Image (cartoon, rainbow, N blue to C red):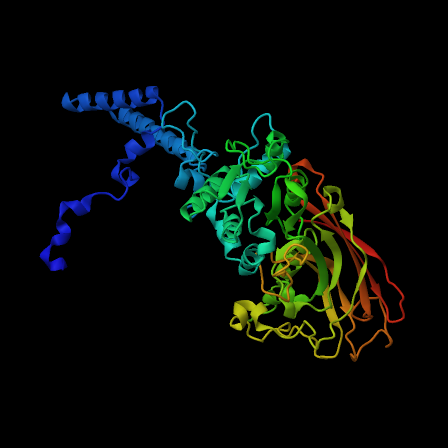
Length: 555
């Protein structure tokens, strides 16, 4: 035991990491990477100070002050230099930001998977470590769209975003089932994984019996992680990971040779029409944010065999109306007994300026839902991803749920901070049969692994507010003014004595016609952004329509 003192043996003093930074002095640490002149200047200054002390010399106050100021400035420049090499400035308060995973964990392994000789001419310089979410300045000579792409791929070089995606059970389990429980699609086939990330889908495919899997990722650091994961889990001979932008890789792809890609000198694994299956988790907020499916389409058309499978193979977009409980407004009704309407006003004004990505509970949806667009991912073109969907009609729910019932979870402290003492403590209308208030349109998508390619075990990955929440949440398009909507068999209908515009609280409508459009952003600085249009009009019980309105939202 510890009383015998065995723990004092020197063998336990050996460091776990041979070059652990804590073993070195700060001066040694900040000196790394300094030029020789700077080091010589510092050494000369130290020697001069030592000689002055040995000679018993003295300095007057002015000299001491000047010397100390010079030392402080030297140290400040060293700290600044070190901070810049770490990708941050001393003012940045990013103590808890994760480091760049490739530079930290894998030392920027070469994209081929072979580490270059240390000190060799081709040795890669380690990328500077950047705080999460930090963006680099646009390099000289590069366009804004190129800078956007670099920041986009760089954002996927951090483990936290991959953990979020892997922790999304609805997402990850849907792909696992598709790849492991559909042998007619995967077993013995060549599978291409676009945007492979940590390699999870590639490994699902390998475990599902794929003959060969090629994963492609634009982020160098995370591609190295995928390669290491595949090798560690026993798939070295099955999975090959290629790093680079698909568009650039396709320019170098082999347009001839063996369509099965089985050349013993397999230097280029991306060969035209050589894959049986293409799998990708490309979906963004509101389905099309990030424009990654454009890349998938290029890979599909060039690399997939005619009639090959794409997973998932269908995507659908849906809309419904959301109520006040889906917004953040109820929180500010009663904050420990105080109302904060100025905060609510500011939030409402900001909400109509852009699309808001946030989780919406099914219990806070106040209308029925409707499918507005269906995309066949096996044949859709990039041009067809800009569209105006068909118009749909939304009416109040008929399943016995209003969507505006009292919900303590949306109040301050999830109910513990709401006292019930303010005038706005009760959100729901006193008349439970009265109209519901629609604050905007909630948008979500489903992706299908249909029987066309997933014959044994078809499935659906849904991001509906009525299903298990995913990391995509939902996309909310707020109305400038809420719309009052009659409920079935309610005490107030459009037939009663009314006043005001159709859809006002004094003149509730019977339904709302909605039409949504989507287009890739034309601005170079937002090349991966998405613009969403919303047209809507209130409809009365007799079919009469109110004023048709339209708004644009950025995602």
